[in-house]
Image (cartoon, rainbow, N blue to C red):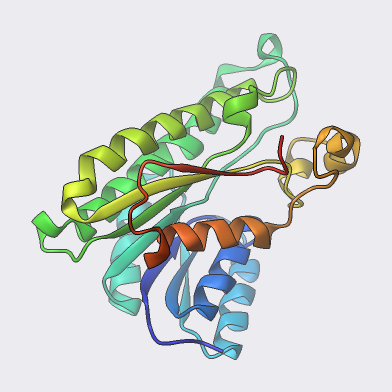
Length: 252
């Protein structure tokens, strides 16, 4: 059941996995939700329908976060259809097939950074422009979805992805300090091995089964467990927390 309205939350990459779980949980807790997707309209609309069936408000918003004009249009559409944005979850991210650096083409590395780094920065910029108290906004929160890969490096698999998420970590720290006086808190979650479709994108859909013995909790995580951490970072309960990270990684 939807609770009293808490504001408008835009979630990128929200048609599946962690993004979809966050959208559903946010709506259940009273947020109106902008459900961003790049390609899968059907999956995004399914998330929107599920939110509506629970008494919440949500709209599907198509945009490639690496394309500036599409991001501008997405933010405008979200504000027009739901109201002034009060929170952003930078969840959209891509992972390419497992590879060593020596075998990577430069086009692949650019794609990974375009979405995971530049897309995150672009969406954060637009959120800040709208939420900053110095610009007439009412403040708000940004949560960047990083990865345990930023700490572990992902050698032999995805050093490009790990490096991109390391950039997101540094960006989180710097932006948090930059916009604190404008009433905006910026934090990040760093998921570990979570049971989503991203592993299939890397060419190993059963990757968690292979690695779970090396995870202290002996299992992969669930998208909803990451969503809980994200929603806490957006909540009044974390009102003195900014520039911080929550590792949702089973102890690894």
